[in-house]
Image 1 (cartoon, one colour):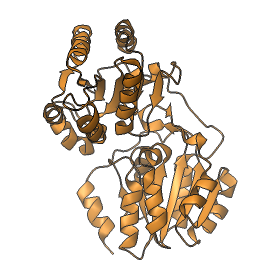
Image 2: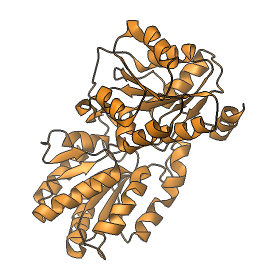
Image 3: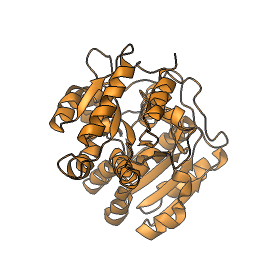
Length: 365
């Protein structure tokens, strides 16, 4: 049984026709099923709070109930619009939240999901959001009950899914096959930035950097891995660069860049000569299912110039890596490098553990 298709059928029967959210690995099959809908029916947001606000606007125009999907790590991003716009004590806007529950009890998960996993139900309770935890034999009745509740009370409700609840989508769509493999670029970056500190974004980027360091036996005391905090790597890198003389490289992804895009304005304004920003750009949320981002709409050369980056570099071909990296790394920052990469990652990708020990190594001068 394809549970995602059955869920969509129930939603359509209840006249729920608008979907917005940020892709999540637990909800991958559901969000990929939505990809067949038009842009007027399904929009992948830059961040979870924006998706909730988008859904609120849709309800104001149609009086219909929208659905927002997200990982529980992004629940914090939704709190401001929930408590100051859609809450039943403010405007009272009905809405369904589908939440991928990472770090759920009795489920083995990565260390960065444990804290959020433990407090997710408490957060929902504090927000007075009625919730159901998905049960395979009961999900139809559970969903119908939640829909009735949000409609009656004009307040959001939540349906929580744990790892393995929904069918996995093994036919992940691959994007960009003609550019540079991320792992190859990272290897070249390590070779050419021996005296630099690297702060890497969450997902495959941090994990590949960690694995390449380990396999090729590069010294592993120059990296800070953002195993969580999607969209915040540039701010961490900026803060580090302002307190250190080391050349600081932010290694970011396009989905994370879009999530908190305003950070670029801050980094370009306050960063000094030692700040370098690298965007690994494959046009998709790859580590959670390959759903597309809207990164292709940005003219990065104009964007970087308009907000104050001193130098902009573009890299699309493998043969140009060393030359471009040399120019970029030896330029006076803040500098921005836009790297077009292929989808796909290393086999048997390692999970990063012992985070406190890694932090100790990183902060040693």
